[in-house]
Structures are given as C-alpha cells and as structure tokens.
Amino acid sequence: MLVTAALVALLYGLLKLAPSLDAPFLPSTAPSSVSTDASNLPYYAVRSLLRMFAALVASVAFTFVYATAAARMRRAEKVLLPVLDILQSVPILGFLSVTVTAFINLFPGSTLGLECASIFAIFTSMAWNMTFAFYYSLMSQPRELDEAARVMRLTKWQRFWRLDVPSGMIPLVWNGMMSFGGAWFFLAASESISVLNHHYALPGMGSYAATAIAAGDLGQVGIAIAVMVVMVIGVNVLFWRPMTAWAERFRVEESEAAERPRSVVLDILRRSSVPELIGRPMRPASRALERWTRPFGLAEHPLGVSPVRERTGDVFFAGAVAAVVVFGAWRALAYVDGTVGLSEFGHAFALGAATFGRVLVLLAVATVVWVPIGVWIGMNPKVTRFAQPVVQVLASFPANFIFPFATVFFVAVGISLDLGSILLMALGAQWYILFNVIAGASAVPTDLREAMTSFGVRGRLRWKSFILPAVFPYYITGGITAAGGAWNASIVAEVVDYGSHHLEATGLGAYIANATGTGEFPKILVGVSVMSVYVVALNRLLWRRLYRLAETRYSL
Image (cartoon, rainbow, N blue to C red; front, side):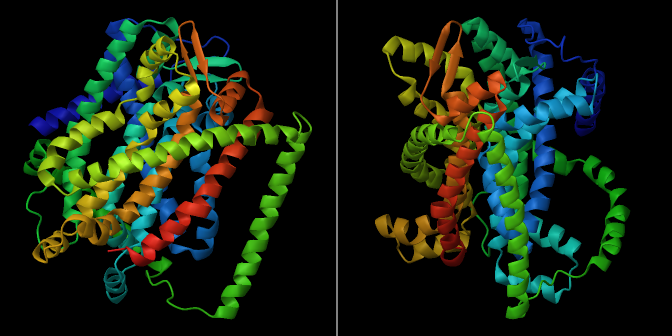
C-alpha cells in the first residue's frame, strides 16, 4: 500500500507538471528572472528535481552506449576517448552558447525548447564522469568472467546485461551519485541562462538563487540553501542510499562483508509485491529482445587478428580521422583569423596558464586531504553508513549558492579572487576524488582484507602494498574527473557577482564567462579550444599513462 501510494503520488505530480513544461514561450518576451516569493519554493524544487533526473536518465543511456563502444571497438577507442576528454573540458556555458538557440528553434513557441536546453546543460555536467567510470570497469573486467561469457556463448545483448552492466554497477552507482551531486553546482547556470546578450529564467531553485543573488538579498539566499539541504538529503535517503545498497548484490568476492549498506526504502521495496507486478509484463519483451538480437552475433570479439590486416585498417582509419580533424581545424582558424585574429590564442593560453596553476594546486591539496579520509570511510562499513549521507550533502550542495557569502568575506578581508577562486573551484571539484576513493576502498574484496590482517600487514607497509594499489585505479578516475570539474568550475568561480560587488580573477574561466555573456562567438571558440588543449594535454601526458598503469598492474 505504501509503495502504491508513492507511485500514484509520483504519477499525479508528473501529470500536474506536464502542462507547464509546454507553456507558450517567446524569446523576446521571456522573463529574465523568477519570483522570490517563498511560497513558490516547493514548485521550484520539483521542477529542478525533474530536470536533474531527466538528465540522469540521459546520462545513463549515453554512458552505456559510448563506454561500451570505446571498450569493445579498438579503433573507435582511439577517437572516442580523446573526444570524451574534449567534451569533459568544454564548460557548460560553451554548450549553452550553441544549444540554447538550437533547442528554442526545435520547439518554436514552447517552453519545452528551453527546458531541453537546461536538461542538456545538466547532462553535460553528469555524463562524462559516469562514462569514464563504466569504461574503466569494462576494461578491468576479470579475465575469467570474459572466458565464462565466451564458453556460455552469450550474445552481445546478453553479455551486456548479464556481465558488463552488473560488473560495472558499483562504480557506476557511486559515480552517478557523485555526478548528480556535481550537477547541483551548475543548476543556477542551467536554469538562469545568459547567452548572446539575452537572459532566460526557468522556474527552479537555481534561477531562484540567481535572482536572490542579483538582488543582494542574503536572507533569500539562506532560504534557498535550507531548501537545497532538504532536497539533497531527501534524494539521498529516497534514491541514492537504496541504489548503493542494491548495488551490493553485484559485488564479486568469496567471503561476505561483515556489514553491508542498508536502506529502509530498499527494504520496503523488496517486501512489496508492486515491483514484481510491474516487472512481470516486461519479461516477454525481454525474451523477445534476446531473440531479435541473436543475429547480431555472439560476444566473442576475436582474441587475435592478422597483423597486416590490422595495420592496413589502422592506416586508413587514421587517415580518415586526420582529414576530418585538419579540415575542421582549418575552418575554425580561418573563422578566428577573420574576426578577432589568431593573436587571441596567445592571450587565451596565457590566461589558461593561470587557471591551470589553480587546478594543480586544487588537485594536490585534495589528494593529500581526501585520499586518507576516503579510504577510512570506504573500508569501514559502519563509518560508511553514517558518513555517506554527510559526504553526499557536502558534495551535492551547490557551492555557488554560498558564493555571495564568500564574496562578502573576500571583500571584507581583502582577499583577491585570484587566490579565493581556488577555494571556490575546490568546493565543486574535490568531491570527485573523495567519492572515487570511497568506491575503490569499498570495492576491495573482503577476503583480501582478511588476508592482509591474517599476515599482520599494518602501518606503512599496508598502505604501500595493499591500500594505495587497491584504490589507485579509482583515484585515477577521480583525478581525471576532478581536473575536468575544476576547469568547468572556473567558469563560475573566476567571476563572482553579488549585488553591487563584482570580483573577477585573471584566468581562462573569466575569459569564457565574459565572452558568453556578451555573445562573442570567436572568443568563445578560442577560450573553449584553449581549455580543451590544456585538459587533453594533461590527460594524455599524465592521467592516461597512470590509467594504463592502473589497468596493467593494479587491477584486481
């Protein structure tokens, strides 16, 4: 009865919201702000949650397709991973400057276009981290499971749902939780959109906070913070905690953990017959899909191929990709040369060096602080039960909501935003390292922990020979996404406004933010290109090499 009532309430709420999602909309008369009447906050909260979960569903679908293609297609991997690096480095404002007009034209006269643009912006802050995590889980799959899938002659469809998804479920859930929390950081930018000298505001908590910040009303900002805390805790209790407890069923180990995550909501769902009644009609469709996908072949990618044939295919593939890249780069450089001039790249690279320095400082401090804490939380189930909600609230809370208070503090103390922006960037990026380390520590098989204890491995030797190698692959995933998140966060951290106060740091994030607000497409292109070069270069020169090391030496 309880589960049925909850489903009915959910469906009723969606039906009530549906008309407002397709309300009339004209760009010239669209509101640039929302009402700050506190009575509207429940409605704003529901609208924001709907966008967040819509983006989460899109991110999961993208992750399954993109990560599987990168892991299973050797040539495609050489293109898909660099593209993913670039997409991760492109700031949300870079996507918004291009997609807002496209979505508005796709749904003329309807708010649905702006809603899709907002959901797409949130999607871009979620998808890349989840894709990297699922890709790594596919690449580090135990060899015996791969051999079992071949012996059982599973089709590609069966292997994906019975091996690939279950083996990657724990890192996918934890990184999905982290990505969902990180997306709150960009809620204001995705709901209160300023592009091409136009400002659009959608009903939601992000636009409410943006309106209160612009008005310089700390009281209303405080109300928004309180509502956000309630929302984050509610989402954690009702959704993410049941998900993390449910994902434990996919853990592969020989001895059972002393204590596993628990969730009251999951216990209620397991005792209810409603999920069984909903799933029963879907079984024939599942069996039909297994029959229809069998002609696509078995999940037996060849273990060896002809070197000559492989080399020939690589040459043609590399030639085609190089031709496309050269043509695109030539057109982009011609466009920039004809507008702001190629010398703008030099200015942007100099600004990028300042932001790059802030990113390095952030990563170093976050590593020293959060790796030990993440290991302590992940390897102690009792601690995990109580610490996870606290960490989830801290990680999910949109730190830019407290930027006004930080601005007042910086002005009062006289701290330059050139230094203060490091703290602001850290509030949105450091949690990727913590969550991935927690996931890595909690994924260490219990039998391996018991073996270390039985052999009396303690202290520095335990950290050097057991703990750090075990969490190293997960730390690399967290480091890559934290670095990308820091670059993204620089867009909102290097330009801070509160009432009459305007603080701006010297950096690439401020450069892109200013260009986006004024609609200067050549500068947006230059800024996004330079940021992509920095991120991809760091990934290729450092993170990817560490990634390969983690795959070959530290994979369990």
